[in-house]
Image 1 (cartoon, rainbow, N blue to C red):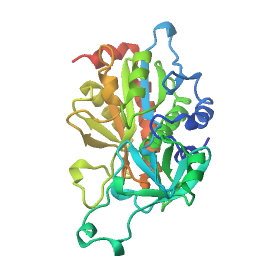
Image 2 (image 1 turned 90 degrees about the vertical axis):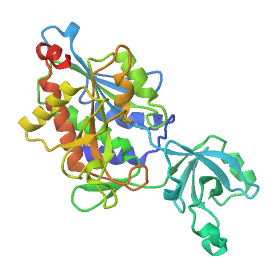
Image 3 (image 1 turned 45 degrees about the vertical axis):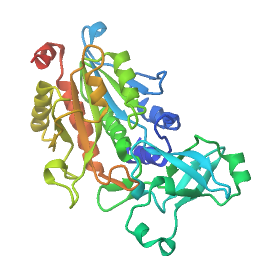
Length: 353
């Protein structure tokens, strides 16, 4: 499957944290061509295994690559007498980005609605200078309270109604590119690995609930017990209001994270591989916990040496997230050549401090 077409299917689907299973058929269909086994674990992670080619396959190196499939979203909290819906957030939703948005309420059927609030003409002067709080917003789906309650339950999820759009060149905009871009990078990695010999068994894990707890990566890593864990996520793309030292340039390749969450020798190896194969990359500094699946992988069981690759992304946690498909391809290529460089002979030396 074409990677961009795959990513479009993922981003156009709904799957907020805890409710990701709608994505499973699309992921499984794309991954099964390039992997040997696929299963869905008890928490909902999709785990695709690509076996390595080793003389002693009973004791292969295990590498876990994690990219989360969940997205931030909203949830029905209450109903007004006029049929309007009150809601709360699932994950890190900035209320300033959702006012006036068209949404889909995922009730017994998908229902279109809009997020509204008091018009500025009717606001008091002191209200006009303040951002509208989420608790002061409602969703209008144009139905009476009685009809709304027939179709919608407390706890039903809500997503922004947004489809992936092409921009100039290789750039695209969509909701949920955080982190379905990472899942697309895993697909590109699989395609590259089909043409490269590798000793390690590779577990491609599309994780659940990263935006609320990282629970998917935690249980996935505990079950797989890999020798190396790699989180593929997104990093802050450069925009005029952000410091260059805290951002990544779109089109310049993935960010290779540096910080306490990252195994130093593995990071050096990753940079050497990027240099050897002329794969564009950038430095991403994150001194403490990265806020990615690598955070929980690192401290699972006895500790798992971890890395983070970050795809540059603008406008994170909005419905107009923006990435460059070139960065996704470069991320997949770097992952593949890094995996191919890991052998039983070299692993022990790499993991030593």
